[in-house]
Image (cartoon, rainbow, N blue to C red; front, top):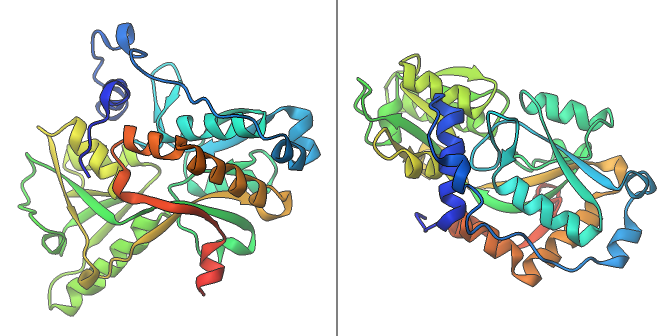
Length: 306
């Protein structure tokens, strides 16, 4: 899964390092746009016409998003780069509207903001579940497993997820990773070892800083995020991935929109356009995530599977 990300990857490395460890890198601004290609996909008149009237009148889709590289990296000036920026810009072109990303503190804030009408959608990473699909339409666009990023200078010797038994792990509150860590903890106690100790924090940056400072022995995150962190800072971090024996499942990660908005079927069809035109593959390959791609975006996959 460690594919080359070219110039787009170089740009993100600058932003990630600044956001995650507050180190200002000289020269990032000068070349950050070098070689970065913008999406060029045709607008679909039919899909634009199918948008809710409120979206057509506003001319914009507003997405919530917490700080979660490589999905969203927030620069010192508030600018957002990452998978979200690329895919949402392409979705906007298909639908004939602008897209905006508003940064929020955590997943509950994003979910509540959508239900209150402040945001039209949230691109996760969030798992599609039957419970969420009671209030939201989900469009699954990638899969992932849970991984744990470990500082190479840490005192704990962690070479596999099993070595986290009895250790302190920082995770984002209410996230997929928090529930997966609970399964790993159950595996540990089932093996006669100490349970893992969860430290719930607001976003991925906070979990990584907790691990770096020694407050936690590891930072739990999606496999995509772990790959991004360890590729950009390979001298500082490694990662281990939770196995099926340890309770891990392959998670369906989805874009969420409020069910009552009627946006779900429209966004799913727009995403399918990105797949058909090759834009989806282009973006995923740029970010080194070819191995977690889906064949097609699926609407409300959890309800169908259950």
